[in-house]
Length: 108
Image 1: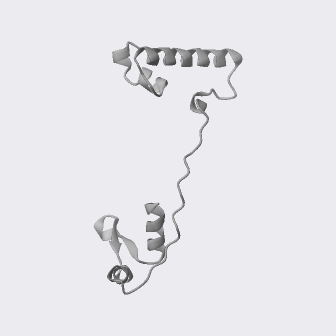
Image 2: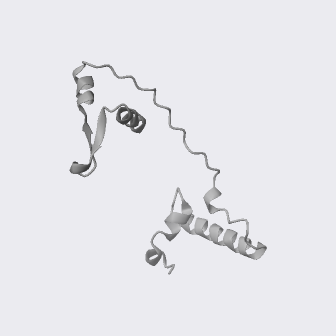
Image 3: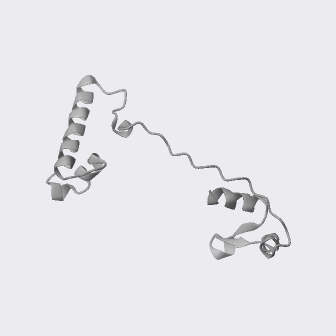
């Protein structure tokens, strides 16, 4: 929400990016007038951020151009990662947990 408001303030000339201060944001004179209450400012309501919907396991799906043998191997490896993660007591993202630290897990 705040990013949208900042863009609106920038578009209205109430703040700017100061190149001399390595890209820091700065309040313009018009912005100071708003802060002093001498000038009104109107902002659009912030849009509620919608969470990205992703089908469970969609990131682990093999690309469509795999042969049947390769797709079967991919699924077998995926199942093995899940098994290793469950043995380690993982409650989330088995692939990352199982392969995050190969030397500790004995997978080189």
